[in-house]
Length: 124
Image (cartoon, rainbow, N blue to C red):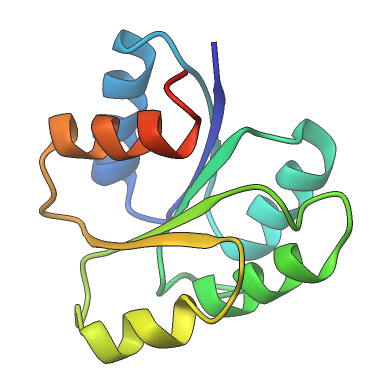
């Protein structure tokens, strides 16, 4: 069972993803913003992080940079999943961080998201 941390301030999206990942037999942790998410990543050491871009307190890019700068969290794969201003150029900015594996739109189907998660976790 993989541990997945979902960092997003959108309650509906977080709930939908949480329920789906539980159904797929993952352990799911939640955080409401980047700062809280970074703290949880340090303590829980999740197998994968799903993170929004625009959040209060600390946004996705700042959180991603902080995670990639620390030895304990730099190898945790991160999927950026955004619903605002989806732009491939913005994706290129995020993908400069070595732990950013995917830049996805929130309209992605849950089945495709699950396939990408399985791939990132080595088929887990």
